Image (cartoon, rainbow, N blue to C red; front, side, top):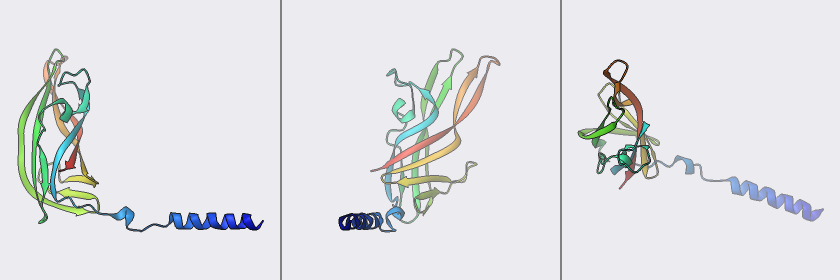
Length: 171
């Protein structure tokens, strides 16, 4: 009986001390200062532009358009964004094609609240909000990616908008 009580007491103490941890563990704020390069740009549709037989939602893998594109955060609250675009179109024979287009190099400001980073953006989409987690920043833009699709019923080109997600990795 005594060994049973001792075992239960030891188990109870192990549970108490094992469950204790620093309150700061879950609240570690990672600062974004430095260069972050695109390593993934996910759209809703899948494409096989690199002709490897595997359609993917990741335009970083399917096109050469985003190699070297980055965002750089400075400790004074400024940020530089250098991101290109991919113009995608689907013709009347349902052939998919793309064209890399020079994007924009803009300067703006950034703020951080916990693991949320906000970059001031004056266009109709509003500010760009990302989440920093370790060595990655993930940004999702709703209805921000446009694809031109030939409509065989109307004989005209329709613009389809999709959400897209960019994943940056710290260098």
